[in-house]
Image 1: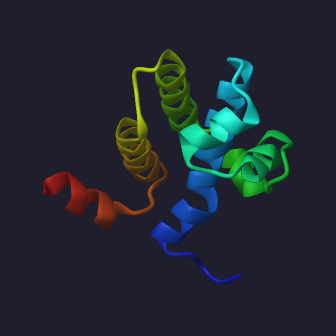
Image 2: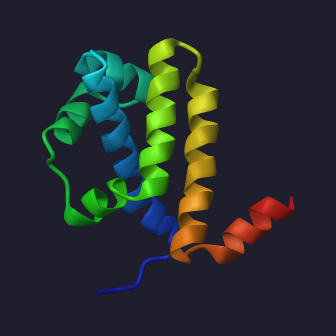
Image 3: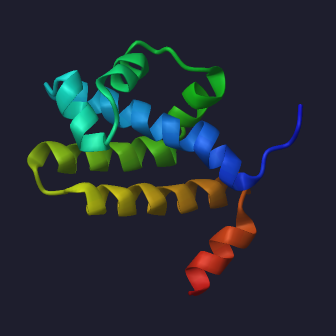
Length: 117
């Protein structure tokens, strides 16, 4: 199997795991699939797939990581309370991604470049 670049890891594992986790948490708070889709900029079909656990082991493993769980809990709470909108959610997901990647040792050059600017 070909090694992935850190940003490919983000696209293939981290972002889907974050979306899955937020979708599940919003569903527990009573959001419909359509409402979740609107908040996350997804289709209802994508939300349905996420809620049915129709995704691979790498996404499931990433979803369980403590950084992802903490970040997605905060994001879901803020969305549910109406305190956050798209810009806030995007910033929180990006911040958690940097923290997640620095903890697992990926993306050190990117993390260092971002935190120094």
